[in-house]
Image (cartoon, rainbow, N blue to C red; front, top):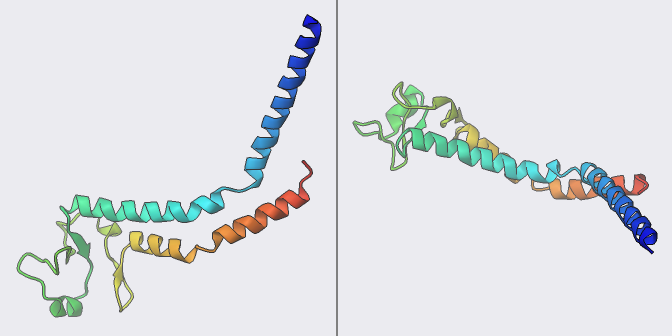
Length: 140
């Protein structure tokens, strides 16, 4: 009777190991990175903007040309509004600040990453189609 239990335990462990390998393969097949990409982009964009705000004491530098600088009603300290200030040599992390002028608005790299997250809202449907395709092709 002890041998039967030992044999039964070995069979259960073998089945568990097979199931674990199959689960590992399944996780590789389902391509979770497609679902994580939009959230990761949004998080990186928000973190980038927060880093600029923290480095500049809650002010966000904006790169303006001379014509826009004259139009912007910056006070003597270079403040445009409650959050934005003119970019100078004294501001920090200027490469991550608002440097892309699209006429309607000026965007930072973080803003563009967060905007891209919105454009990638179709990725769950792509993921679902790819997983169904893989599952139909793969013999488990």
